[in-house]
Figure 1 (cartoon, rainbow, N blue to C red):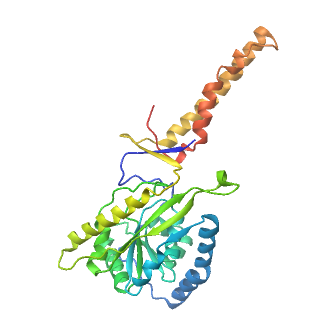
Figure 2: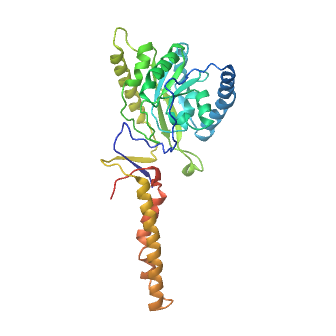
Figure 3: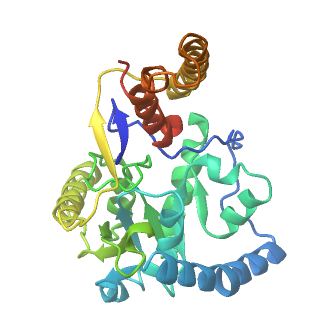
Length: 328
């Protein structure tokens, strides 16, 4: 049975399932620390430790393949911005490392990613560029992203912003993030995550295989405003992703739009309480049947709740804890 996600807002609903309390980023957050020891450790962490681990994980576990990666070679000297659909918390943090190799990928991340003690520092050293938590920090953030472009780095952006696990469509996204490429006259390169059916003896127990398809770079036009360029680049990237999304071979979840947001934790709690009440009622009814009919009580006393129990167990097993669904 497919798991179902109910959403009401394609631009803002998030199904990442993380419950991290993010810390407030300082307005003057240091995006380019100059500590030499930290820079050396960051280099070793990225090149010697993280890259081999990511390679083994993506190739052996996710069976990932990258199509058209050779296109990136011609953009590597001057830097570029990568734009991809956002369908996984873990994979979307790992895959840029392989796509841009040997060039390091800097990824725009949610501030939650740098809020975890110790791990947060590792995320920073591995190329995480956290978004500010305060509007007063936006200027510093924009300056940092533009500095990456001037340094000819590769910056990975997920314009959909929010994670929808294994979503096979492309959600609408604004042109805001494309202004970075337009301002610096660097290409915007689209990448689409595509899910393929698992194969082999244990295919029913394996997660989908992943294909990353790299598209042709979209360049800003000369003598055109930043806003107009950003909008045009966004449209071309969105068109490429939409065309690639039809190549998906498997869909694990159904996403259904609803007009009402629901607290699923409350509904799950209600289901569990109802299950206990049904179990108690079933037990009392069975005991009553034994008193009236003896040990050979009619099956009515044991089967009355079976259908309802099965439906409830199915609902609980689908894992509604991190999902939302409409009230009945």
